[in-house]
Amino acid sequence: MNLFTDQLNRKINLPFPPKRIISLVPSQTELLYDLGLRDEVVGITKFCIHPHEWLKSKTHIGGTKKIDLEKIKQLNPDLIIGNKEENEREQIEKLMKLYPVWMSDIYTLKDALNMITNIGTLVGKQQEAIHLKLRIESQFQNISNLPSTTPSLKTAYFIWRKPYMAAGNNTFINDMLKRSGFNNVFDNNDFTRYPEVNSEQIANANPEVILLSSEPYPFKEKHIQEFQAICPKAKILIVDGELFSWYGSRLLQAPLYFKKLKTNFNFMN
Image (cartoon, rainbow, N blue to C red; front, side, top):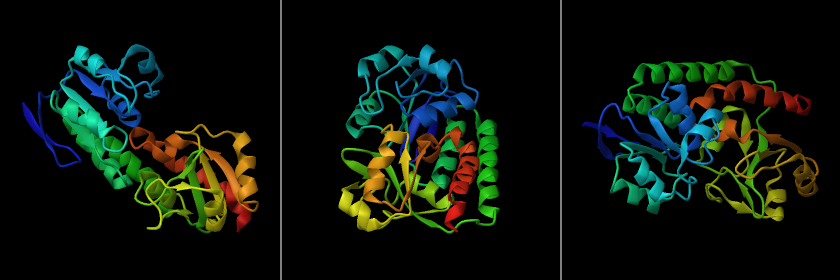
């Protein structure tokens, strides 16, 4: 048995390397695949859509918020990997009494990179994880070194409809917005991390840009008119929510996407 520490600063004993892993978070499931694990991952959630082959071949243990404890017992894992925000505390605490559970807790890119290297160490893929981390850091450094072609635009990023919910302060999405050159209008202490806001509050925030995420709510082109009525002067786009909120190996794709996204606003100079 080896001793590890998770991002909640909990000490965990588990056999090393683990041979029966369950992942409770889509972005971390994809990370395990990209670190080279194949047979070791035995269970994933129904929302773990990447890689597609695992969605078909791995056992589904419910959703991120509603875990099937009986299926987990049948799989008899020697490691479960979850996340403080994405998983329900009560269910996680039940699992902790039965199995080694490693939890991530992520608010920034730095937290995500630490998670990647920590999980690499946890599953016996330390060198692969370090290499991945360095590649992600390089990609983000490349976009931060580019001269800005647009000002920092007042932006609202929406994750839900009925009620409207936005990404606020102290969220991973907010950190991604800053890194891609957007100034989040809901990044202040007047709002919660994911505030519910009405049409009047949105109009008063007066965003120049409104980004409608493809997940968790599947915003489509048809919803643009709805927001345009609230903020007639705002530029509104549907954006890839995975590239703003997935904090695993998909981060490799995010900087180039952010760079291309900002070209949509060149006309606002």
